Image 1 (cartoon, rainbow, N blue to C red):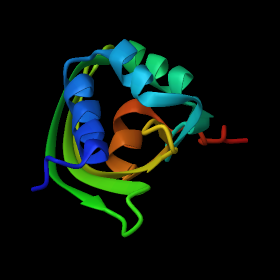
Image 2: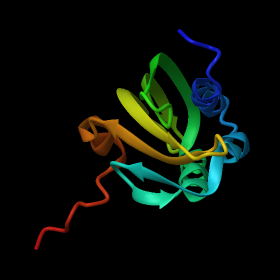
Image 3: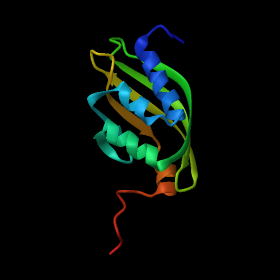
Length: 133
């Protein structure tokens, strides 16, 4: 595990801040025009996404298994397990991968989230669910 790479450290800090429910510090890691692509919420402004996540969460426990870097060091991916306790009750655990793209100022320009949404949709609902006629 390389700890010398500042972008790898930023990715690890992101997960530490999320575990601490420190939304303000997470948002500081992102560029002002950054966005998040979520399999459940779609594409959102990063600040709006994390404020929404903070409001929906009672507790976040994230275990990072590995952080991988692209050849040009602009893109990093992290494989993790998320043990998520919802503010409205209920708990969900899933494995996922977040892909972070950095700008030239070492701030996160975008983050794409990948995980199997089926268990999450069963617990929190499906925003794409259509009413039955």
